[in-house]
Length: 178
Image (cartoon, rainbow, N blue to C red; front, side):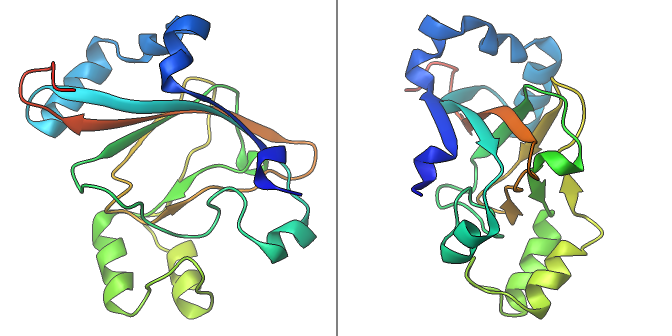
């Protein structure tokens, strides 16, 4: 019944040892996009493998398991998250969803303050035209400024799961900041 039953994580410090190919995501195209986004070099600050599976409704009623309620992350607003699908994922796989910065500001100005909220503001977020869901074939990438955009994890339906990587990046001065 604790959340670790539903999620397995391998932290970034073990990537090089267990799965060095995860760094292949940072190819010339992705690096070019990131350098343009940040206006220069960037630092991969952290990363994790994640595996999410179905969570029974009675567990979800008791608590949030996968950050599945609309929220923004604490941290510098310069932080960018990269989500990478490791398996083909459709709507039943519990995709990550996000709305853009402008829509986030709008709903916050209307009074949305906490992932514990429900009601009309949550419905507004769910139906926002800027909302995107991360579905697609393995290798699909989604970039989200998680400190400035409301986002949430989805819950896979019974018999489905989601495998993914998450990296957190920051701008840096010369590509060697630690």
